[in-house]
Image (cartoon, rainbow over all chains, first blue to last red; front, top):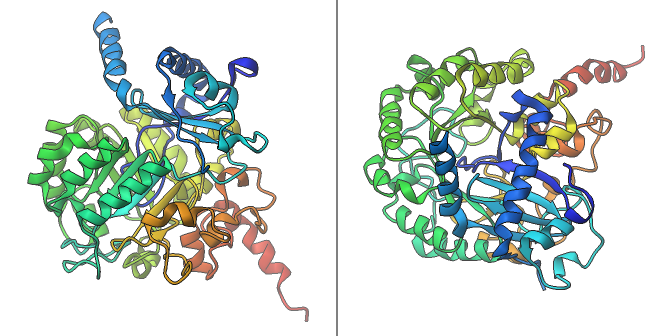
Length: 64
Length: 421
């Protein structure tokens, strides 16, 4: 997914939340519209992440 | 149009406090509350969108790609809060009963577990049973999860405890009702006529909550009804249809031969559900065990990866926990062997996660045999459902016997093993 280099890169977007307590549910609705639609959405998500990074969250780090 | 834009902006603003992030060796996972998503980013982007220490522990080793290594913690935990349920479904994968399981945990233990999961950076909970809606402390537990930054989600049969559930529905991110067929098909799959009660629960939940969907265990009996199920979801204004493959677990092990889908149905699965989703304009989700059936149609691998479509990620992206707190790789799997003097508990996640051999075959999927080893989707699919493999082949690390590619390879392999006369 796009935006290589200094701007960084989005590897994947897992949409929605999984209420199913027996397996990992993934939204495959995007398979209907293909990579083009996702290529449009991904920069929007990237912009949303950056827009809200003026108050960035502290990330949970790995074990010290 | 202006109203729509205003609505989007309001949702994004309202969702602001929910944002969380967790560092990973490849970069970070950032949770967005609206749109509801987990975004996997590399280190460069992680530095831009999260607050990162100069040299975080998670980034000591060289940067990798998503999927190259086990995550630092699961994305979600599937907590089977109880095994109590009076429905008696013939294919119940937990073998639930009105008595429940021995030594079931209560509110205090599950609260402690949620604290541990929050400290590890887990994002989502999927709460299930049995029937968790009957637990008098379910709302308190969901509120605690919210307070610790986790999003609790719930699956219910819609058959019990619905009055209390309506009052606490707003504490859950998503609530799905199990609905394995419409009308008489429901009875054919579950062994009793519960459709009217489940439908009533769906209507009541939808009246108080937008994020309500249905979970459908796909069997050979309801496969032909999938389009009608999507139409039903549209008619009820549901947010999603989540399709689950039938697993030979619990009472489902006995019903597996009769209820599992045929090979032809598995091959037709993807076009069937996409056509139904398109026709009725309903979002569709599929469970991890369906990845071999998606790969059968050779979709764009990069697109699958970008949608985080993976096969078996038990003991990696997800974990399960039994009603007595024992940790599992997924809800269908048996608890791992003892670690030290007892089987690991979900409250001991941090210690067990990085233990040598943790989660056994669930983490050794790279050591695949044919036809998985040469499959171009193997890095995503990871060999299919290990629970089905264990039941059919007696070996969880063997290729998923219901994968079309595995089925196609079978005659050739059988031929090679014919005795020479």
